[in-house]
Image (cartoon, rainbow, N blue to C red; front, side, top):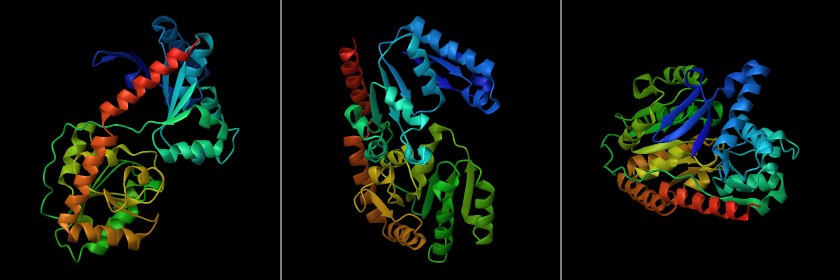
Length: 334
């Protein structure tokens, strides 16, 4: 296997990661600077990988610049192409079936969506794509042990600090619950353009001492944050199938989130977590109060979430599904 990926300038080049050759191309900088020479070099790099490695199948993730590069390389070296979509494309296409994003999907031999919500979004934009579309959910490792949550009430948010994630609602809910739960704390892990305004919001509500902004957390340390939480809060407006929701389930913790695309695929309301309507601060506060006031209910939701993760979201199951798809695509290739 050879993996081609986008990268920061310091990571450009060829590396060995766990025995896999990884070729990193600085596509973000190239596009931001509109550097035609660098773009041509990147195209040649990916094309050379395809020519020399001669893969049986190319698997592109999402329909961004790297997918475009692999499609261009494929024109010179015909190889079956699978494209996986991780997000709701209608956000970017503005409902147009002629979007360049959708051109990438039309060029693929097979398409996978990480959730049924994403699949429905794709077919809503281009119904004919349903013939080559299937759903393969994301997978996560289930090897970490489940440990009891802390007795002290503790909430966590893990993700980007951007407007669509609605972290402001989490902070406002904590402010409302502070009087009832004097020891309540909130950990916010992540970075993004909204960090400054979120810090200001916590200060204006008088809960700075309850909210810990811990910044960007290495992937291997995320379980420690989830493990300490009574519940994980994800009030996003839209998701594909959020990895952090699956990781939360693996740790036996409930999600309190919004009934939005992606999250509604990851969480069964009332069974593996609690979902409220988008933007509903009263509903979010009430749901958080429910799990904080009834630790036994939180434990039951978390246990059910873990059981569902074992059935549907294991990394092994995800890999098996893709391996089977690779074999079918290669067998059907001329």
